[in-house]
Length: 480
Image 1 (cartoon, one colour):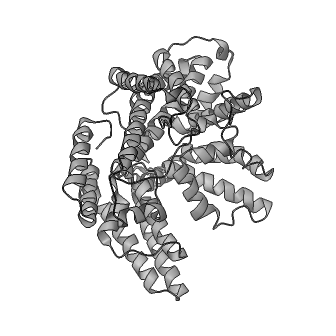
Image 2 (cartoon, rainbow, N blue to C red):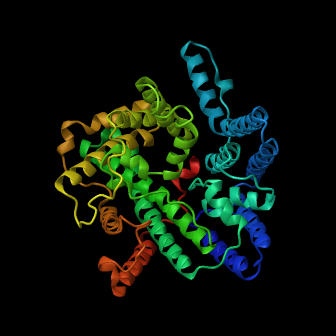
Image 3 (cartoon, helix red, strand yellow):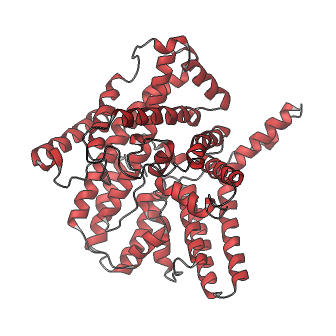
């Protein structure tokens, strides 16, 4: 079920009313969350419900076994390892069998062997990467002693399948979400109102910014060999805002929806396009995945507390894995390595944590230096997004190569003129609230302390969404 669909518009109020006014006891609420979440997920394909149930049962059982084997480190390690392998095998089969089969077939064809029989047609279950990583973090944290294993199977099913963030995150940790599910929740009017604001902003970013950018992006990409360098550059920029509006929009809707049910999910985006270097960008983009990879892969590999060569290798590994997590295509792996190459110099110079504060803190406008840093970082990120968006490595290189041609200076806006205004509006609102958890989190500060201005923004967003929305456009990250 899509957030931006009529079905969800009907589904959400019904679930909200039943949750708070009918199923008022904690156990009944958690059971209802599971039922509603399985209806939500099964709307695409009910057969995939079996997979999420298997993943849930594997991690639930392994957590209990690990806790019972307290003191027997070897057995605990075996149980944890078996659960990790089993879940990764499921993920690998559905997500990567096509990729490796096709790559192997291409290799055999290169040497003159007919290998069409090698290719497979396996359907990728929606959101499998997200809920698999969420399940794995639970069993690993139980093994590490960071959280006690739960024996409440209904609550655990609710933790894995909680519908707002089920198919595209944020990737939650059991240390944050599970205690909220296990403990009684009370309706918070202020939190619900704030959640509605965040949902509104998420719908605007998805249906006005991302979906309209997608029209220009698809047109440019489908004819990239005949477009000017300037048009191709604008195509890359539009895709940068498409993927941001699409994915951060989903996160805003998910986090806002969760607040309606008394659940607080972690922030997943922190205005990443205002970053001053690539390290700051990766602290602010898809935060739940970045922190997951750091805690469960980078640090176990040795992190940055080892030799310089090992630090470089560890960094390349985690970025390559992050790229592969996004999809079974060499473009994603190259995209990950590209970002690693941008990140490594900052890491080696010990400047990867230089910018921990907000840009232009306590100032309305950035300094010239900050502005140039933001622009430079955005350009580097956009070049990476071109690799990410391309169908093949060859296409990515041709696309980028055609940008840096004499026609780069043929400044003429052929596509995306109207959505450019929307992008500027989005950037202004987010800049004014860059110190908040989301762009419409108004705390009576600045120009937004005036109610008339706040309501002008609300109605403006609603009208713009109605006028420019594109119904039933799927979310980019559903494919991951």
